[in-house]
Amino acid sequence: MTVHATDSGPTDPAPQEVSAATEAEPKRKRLALVASKGSLDMVYPVLMMASTAAALGWEVGIFCTFYGLDIVNKKRNKHLQVAAIGNPASPPPFKGVPLKVPPILGVLPGAQAAATTFMKKWMRDSNMPEFQDLLDTCREFGVNFYACATTMGVMSVDPEDMIDGVSCLGATAFLDYAAEADVCLFV
Amino acid sequence: MTTELQAAKVLDCKGLLCPIPVVKTAKAIKEVAVGEILMMEATDPGAPPDMEAWSRQTGHELVKQDTADGVFRFWFRRTS
Image 1 (spheres, rainbow over the protein chains, first blue to last red):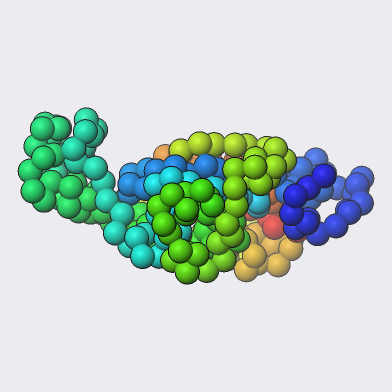
Image 2: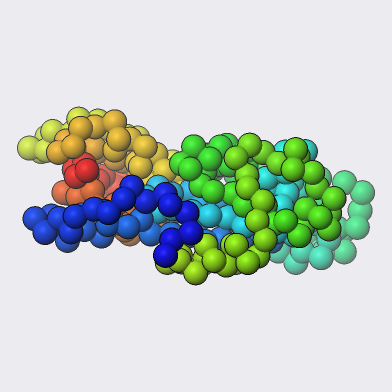
């Protein structure tokens, strides 16, 4: 029935428990996330959803596919950036200043680095963790990261480039995992 | 703090945004014994619905909550 035998085993129905406890005890809820993007602004929501679900006691699996593979690629995940070009929601330089950066300026040298710096600054100013810290939190909570086997082949990514604890799966195995999930999200 | 609820631990999440308060609360609840109270303070405007949902999902009882001077306070009893 379940793909991964991570459940602690059959538990009794615990009829004496109040309803709040019976929701959490018998079987952990499962969140199946597909992460298909590798820009900083697209990986934050993935890790925020994952860490929140883990904090709720849920089991979480993230299928890192296409550019989302960068999340678990230790050679690349320290250099995630925000797109300046083709990004109409491009971060304004200063928080709270209602100033839009014309997307055409995204072609200027350094625009992407600047957009990335501004987003990192907002996050820091709001006491938000850095990407790497949020990733560590997810791993500490036991979030499962799955690397898309096809993406690894297409993008010539070696298994050694992956952070520890990542297993390599195809879409079939992930869908099998997701079929048992309570919530599925694609980012 | 003047209530009859004696918190075994107080967690300060003021100034932190989602998902950090819920992440810290999930860790901190393990640092109190079953039956004991964890009190958490937050300023994130999303905290009241989020912490109620956290309580529903984890089963840790939200015994009491209040708001004072823009600070939301939550008292959770560890149930398991």
